[in-house]
Image (tube, rainbow, N blue to C red; front, side):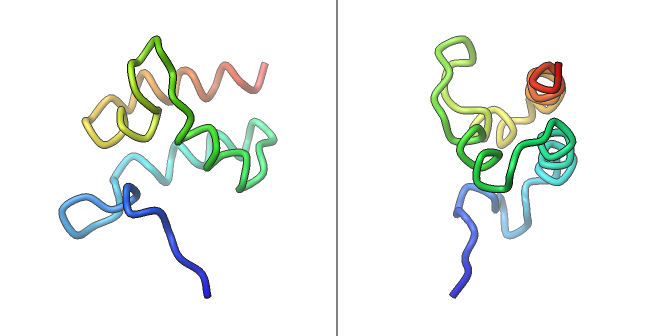
Length: 71
């Protein structure tokens, strides 16, 4: 049985910025598992997790960080 993390859903729909952010992470050669781990790893500089930041509309900051992972 497959499932998705509850935090991927907001107000009954998938978090709008999640698809693009996952694409950036996969382009940076992250596996699905590594991408999900990154999204849910606490980051003191945010504070919180990248997923929390996406849920609160901070897409640009999170995508910038994800793009930096590719270098």
